[in-house]
Image 1 (cartoon, rainbow, N blue to C red):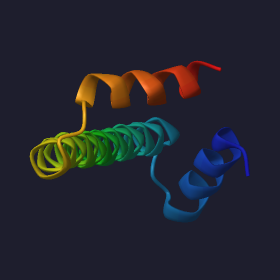
Image 2: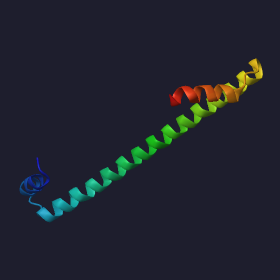
Image 3: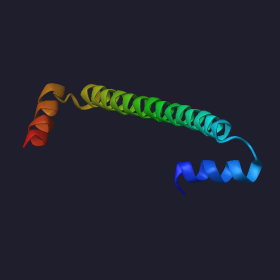
Image 4: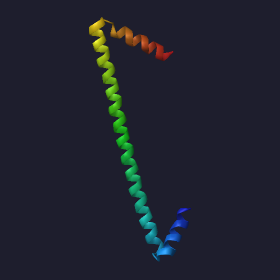
Length: 86
């Protein structure tokens, strides 16, 4: 149902002027848009935190491996970066 048709239908059923119905629907649209933006921001923050935790885990893993097995971190990182660039 189109927005204009919905406004006319609600106005006819409730005897409320069309302008008032349109104002209420506009206000509800604004509220829904704000809630949607809030959810997107929350998701973005969660993804950022998870990515930071992943990177931190990788750094800690490389540090532990460096201490235990005496691997060369620079060579390892370069090797994987070369594989990714191919």
